[in-house]
Structure formats: structure tokens, C-alpha cells
Image (cartoon, rainbow over all chains, first blue to last red; front, side, top):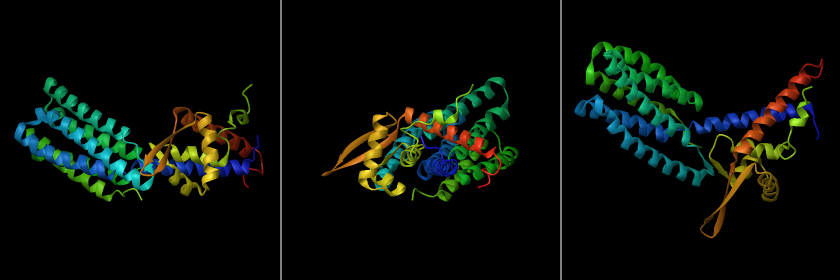
Amino acid sequence: MDVDPVMDRLLLVELQARVEDNRRRAGVLRFPLLAIGVANVLAAGWCLLAGRDHLLAFYAPVLAVVVLASRHHFRRMAERHGLLLPIRTWVLAACGLAVASAAVSRLGAALGATMLEEVGPSLVWVLGYHLLGRWGRNRALMAATIVMLPSTAVLATLASGDALVAAQLAVNGVLVCAAALSTAELA
Amino acid sequence: MTPHPIHRLDDAVHQRVRLGILAACIGVAKVDFTYLKTTLGLTDGNLGRHLETLESAGLIAVERVPEGRRQRTWIKATPRGRQALRREIAALRELIDGVDGIDGLGEG
């Protein structure tokens, strides 16, 4: 086997660049992010109507629709560009976050910790969005999560109960939509 | 004694085009033949030969899907292929680190 240090160095740099490039492509989540952002805004309305205890009943079917629509969108993009983006990572992330945020809310209720019940689920989503942004090298999404933290703190001083949860969902939803619109589509 | 990193370089993988194919398949679900051909700047025949080598080594899976009168070829890295690429990158990094330790060679 030929081993040429200079060529191997070039090869390594080229490989790392290609892998990094693919990672960035995998973060091209404009459609699913936009769909999740819109879902969050709709969830805010649902929260005001049905109450925060029934949010999981809203998210389960809505996330299923988001996943199916995104899969269809990614397949259409693949037909055009010859590159199918992975869907599994962010689907697992979205479903995991929905369940984790509901669990945090229930835990807060069980412990009688109102702040944990009302703000905890939103913080779980913020953390999830941030990790998703890091994974996909999506700067817009990471920047959005940095805005979400102080906005949550401000909202917590202005509202409480279902109104606070709904306000966080609406603000976070709008920020995710903004991040999605700042995310380039697959070129 | 730890074996030299060259012993961890796999003949099926340690080739510029084949490494490029594997790297192009990492992090995405699958890519098609035309995408690989354009991205790597190869001819149909050249790419086809390298794909055969990788497929027979179990490093990629090739799927041919009829599209109208033509066939579209989709390629995805198998778990073995992803692992092979990771091993290759680690071995290359180790080789280069070893060379960087020798005065004069690391600068060039």
C-alpha cells in the first residue's frame, strides 16, 4: 500500500471537508423547522382553549403530520437534487422533546413547583432546538435559541398559568419560523 | 507493540475516489449516481467500477429504481462502510501526526 504523507494529508483535509459539508446539508431543515414553528404557534392557541395539560394530545397528531409532510418534501428534493437528507435524527429529537417536555410539566405539577411546570417544558424545547442546531450546523436555529432564553424569563414575569405557556409557545414558534426562513434550502 | 497505522488502512477504502464516495454518503440518507458523478468529477465508467468495488466489499448498498424508461441508481453507505471511513480517517490522522513529529516534514 502506498503511503505518501503529503497526499494523505490532502486526502484527510478533503475527506473532513466533505463530511462537514454533508453535516451542513443535513442541517438544511427549512421545511420541517417551519412546520414545527407553525405547530408551536397553533399549540399556543390550543393551550389557551384546552389548557396546558392537553398539549401532548395536540402535539402527537400534529408532529405525525409534520413528519409525513417533511418526508414527502425531502423525497421531492431528492428527486430534484439526487441527495436524500436524513429525517430520522430530527424526528427522534422532535418526538423525544414532546415527551420530555410533557414529563417535565407533569413532574412540576406533582412536586407543586409551578415554575417548573410552566417554564420547564419550554426550556426543554429550547435545549432541544439548540442541540439540533449544533448537530446540523444551523446557526440561525442556534441564534434563535439564544433569544428564546431571555424571552422566556421576561414572559415569566408578565404572565402565569396557561397564558404563560401559550405565550412561550407562540414566541418560540415565531422564532423557529424565523430561523427556518433564514435557513437556505438545498441548492 | 501497537501496529503501525498503515495496517489499519483498508485496501478497498484507501483510494481517493472510493474515499470520496464514502464521504459523500456520510451524513445523508442516500445519494444518486449523477450526484456522485458531478460532485466527484468522474466518468460513468470510472464511478461504476469504484461502486462495484465498494459494493462487493459490503461498504455501500446500491439500489436501482425504475424511473420511466430509465433506472435511477441510489447509493448509501452501510454501517460497515461508515465504520470503515471512520477507521480510515483515524488511521490517516495518526499517520500524519506521526510524520508531523519528524523535523522538517511537518512544515511542507
